[in-house]
Length: 136
Image 1 (tube, rainbow, N blue to C red):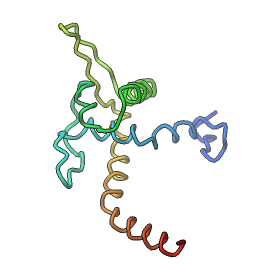
Image 2 (spheres, rainbow, N blue to C red):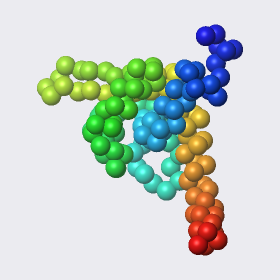
Image 3 (cartoon, one colour):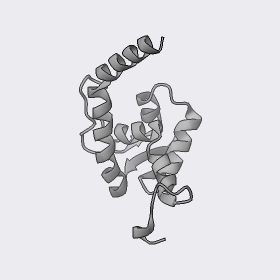
Image 4 (tube, helix red, strand yellow):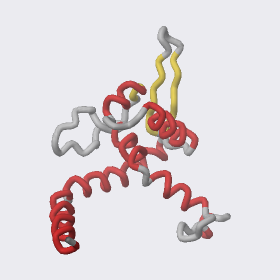
Protein backbone atom coordinates (compact mmCIF):
# COMPACT_ATOMS: atom_id res chain seq x y z
CA UNK A 1 0.00 0.00 0.00
CA UNK A 2 1.18 3.50 -0.66
CA UNK A 3 1.09 6.17 2.04
CA UNK A 4 -1.97 7.75 0.41
CA UNK A 5 -3.85 4.43 0.59
CA UNK A 6 -3.59 3.87 4.35
CA UNK A 7 -6.99 4.15 5.99
CA UNK A 8 -7.36 3.14 9.64
CA UNK A 9 -11.11 2.74 9.14
CA UNK A 10 -10.40 -0.38 7.05
CA UNK A 11 -10.03 -3.52 9.17
CA UNK A 12 -7.07 -4.91 7.23
CA UNK A 13 -5.08 -1.69 7.03
CA UNK A 14 -1.68 -1.79 8.76
CA UNK A 15 -2.29 1.72 10.08
CA UNK A 16 -5.18 0.32 12.15
CA UNK A 17 -2.82 -2.17 13.75
CA UNK A 18 -0.36 0.61 14.48
CA UNK A 19 -3.13 2.78 15.93
CA UNK A 20 -4.13 -0.12 18.16
CA UNK A 21 -0.54 -0.46 19.36
CA UNK A 22 0.14 3.21 20.08
CA UNK A 23 -3.12 3.75 21.95
CA UNK A 24 -2.28 1.02 24.46
CA UNK A 25 -1.96 2.52 27.95
CA UNK A 26 1.40 0.86 28.60
CA UNK A 27 2.84 2.18 25.33
CA UNK A 28 1.65 5.66 26.29
CA UNK A 29 3.19 5.42 29.75
CA UNK A 30 6.48 3.87 28.57
CA UNK A 31 6.95 6.65 26.01
CA UNK A 32 6.15 9.25 28.66
CA UNK A 33 8.56 7.61 31.12
CA UNK A 34 11.39 7.80 28.61
CA UNK A 35 11.06 11.60 28.70
CA UNK A 36 10.26 12.14 32.37
CA UNK A 37 12.60 12.79 35.24
CA UNK A 38 10.87 10.03 37.18
CA UNK A 39 9.70 12.33 39.97
CA UNK A 40 5.94 11.81 39.50
CA UNK A 41 5.38 15.26 40.92
CA UNK A 42 1.99 16.86 40.31
CA UNK A 43 1.94 18.67 37.00
CA UNK A 44 4.99 16.89 35.59
CA UNK A 45 4.49 16.92 31.84
CA UNK A 46 7.22 14.53 30.72
CA UNK A 47 8.92 17.30 28.81
CA UNK A 48 12.45 16.58 29.98
CA UNK A 49 15.31 15.62 27.75
CA UNK A 50 15.08 12.08 26.44
CA UNK A 51 17.48 9.82 28.22
CA UNK A 52 18.16 6.09 28.37
CA UNK A 53 16.30 4.22 31.09
CA UNK A 54 17.05 0.79 32.44
CA UNK A 55 14.35 -1.85 32.58
CA UNK A 56 14.26 -1.67 36.37
CA UNK A 57 13.79 2.13 36.26
CA UNK A 58 10.87 1.77 33.87
CA UNK A 59 9.36 -1.00 35.99
CA UNK A 60 9.53 1.18 39.12
CA UNK A 61 8.12 4.19 37.24
CA UNK A 62 5.06 2.22 36.06
CA UNK A 63 3.25 0.77 39.09
CA UNK A 64 0.78 -1.90 38.06
CA UNK A 65 2.61 -3.13 34.98
CA UNK A 66 3.69 -6.76 35.12
CA UNK A 67 7.18 -7.76 34.04
CA UNK A 68 5.64 -9.74 31.19
CA UNK A 69 3.60 -6.76 29.94
CA UNK A 70 6.53 -4.36 30.21
CA UNK A 71 8.75 -6.77 28.29
CA UNK A 72 6.10 -7.25 25.58
CA UNK A 73 5.56 -3.50 25.31
CA UNK A 74 9.28 -2.75 25.03
CA UNK A 75 9.75 -5.45 22.38
CA UNK A 76 6.82 -4.13 20.34
CA UNK A 77 8.13 -0.56 20.55
CA UNK A 78 11.59 -1.72 19.52
CA UNK A 79 10.15 -3.71 16.60
CA UNK A 80 8.21 -0.65 15.40
CA UNK A 81 11.32 1.52 15.63
CA UNK A 82 10.05 3.72 18.47
CA UNK A 83 12.83 2.82 20.90
CA UNK A 84 16.29 1.35 20.79
CA UNK A 85 17.57 -1.31 23.14
CA UNK A 86 21.23 -1.15 24.03
CA UNK A 87 23.05 -3.96 25.80
CA UNK A 88 26.31 -3.11 27.53
CA UNK A 89 28.60 -6.01 28.46
CA UNK A 90 28.98 -5.15 32.13
CA UNK A 91 28.60 -7.44 35.13
CA UNK A 92 25.68 -7.72 35.44
CA UNK A 93 24.68 -6.86 31.87
CA UNK A 94 23.21 -3.36 31.53
CA UNK A 95 20.25 -2.96 29.18
CA UNK A 96 18.88 0.48 28.43
CA UNK A 97 15.98 1.76 26.34
CA UNK A 98 15.83 5.12 24.59
CA UNK A 99 13.47 6.93 22.24
CA UNK A 100 14.37 7.02 18.56
CA UNK A 101 13.50 10.04 16.42
CA UNK A 102 10.32 8.24 15.39
CA UNK A 103 9.46 7.48 19.03
CA UNK A 104 10.20 11.07 20.00
CA UNK A 105 7.77 12.36 17.37
CA UNK A 106 5.06 10.03 18.73
CA UNK A 107 5.93 11.05 22.29
CA UNK A 108 5.07 14.66 21.49
CA UNK A 109 1.52 13.61 20.61
CA UNK A 110 1.24 11.18 23.54
CA UNK A 111 2.39 13.91 25.92
CA UNK A 112 -0.55 16.05 24.82
CA UNK A 113 -2.97 13.17 25.36
CA UNK A 114 -1.57 12.45 28.83
CA UNK A 115 -1.77 16.13 29.77
CA UNK A 116 -5.35 16.36 28.49
CA UNK A 117 -6.39 13.32 30.56
CA UNK A 118 -4.84 14.77 33.71
CA UNK A 119 -6.29 18.26 33.13
CA UNK A 120 -9.83 17.02 32.45
CA UNK A 121 -10.11 14.19 34.95
CA UNK A 122 -12.31 16.19 37.35
CA UNK A 123 -14.76 16.93 34.51
CA UNK A 124 -14.85 13.29 33.47
CA UNK A 125 -15.41 12.11 37.05
CA UNK A 126 -18.26 14.62 37.49
CA UNK A 127 -19.84 13.49 34.21
CA UNK A 128 -19.57 9.85 35.23
CA UNK A 129 -21.23 10.55 38.57
CA UNK A 130 -24.05 12.50 36.89
CA UNK A 131 -24.56 9.71 34.33
CA UNK A 132 -24.59 7.02 37.01
CA UNK A 133 -27.16 9.00 39.01
CA UNK A 134 -29.42 9.35 35.95
CA UNK A 135 -28.96 5.72 34.91
CA UNK A 136 -29.63 4.71 38.41
